[in-house]
View 1 (cartoon, one colour):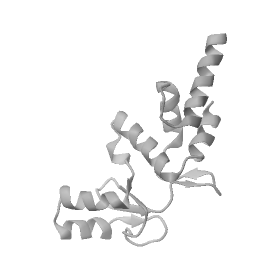
View 2 (view 1 turned 180 degrees about the vertical axis):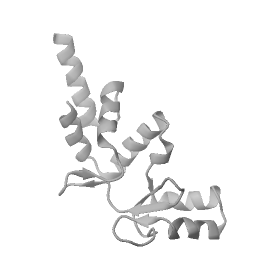
View 3 (view 1 turned 60 degrees about the horizontal axis):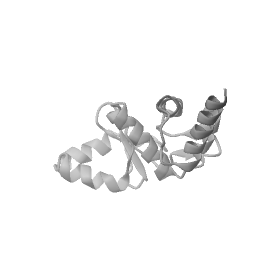
View 4 (view 1 turned 45 degrees about the vertical axis):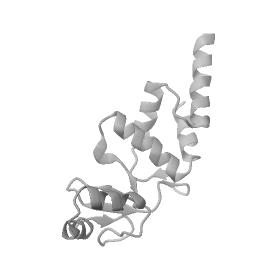
Length: 138
């Protein structure tokens, strides 16, 4: 079942994967692991700490997944590192390498299986339903 759910998650678009991951983070108190899209950045900049120098530092001391430089505000997604600085990146799932970026896919799959409740994603929910049916037949 793990592999089926992994494939189903890989079939989602990046925004759906992010929503699924962020729901998991909220439910398991992993707020520091939440992924935000760049549109959310402006909310953080005005609501959290509106000081421009503060945010310049968050970018400068942050990093970009695609280079050795500071965080790039032109990327699609960002997370905060352990120091509160921004890490920027563009993709969530890389189909060529079959890797998830900034998502612990094994933890997410375990959570989905352990919770065994609808996720709002048809393919994943169907896998869970089929497991319920197989369990009922036994």
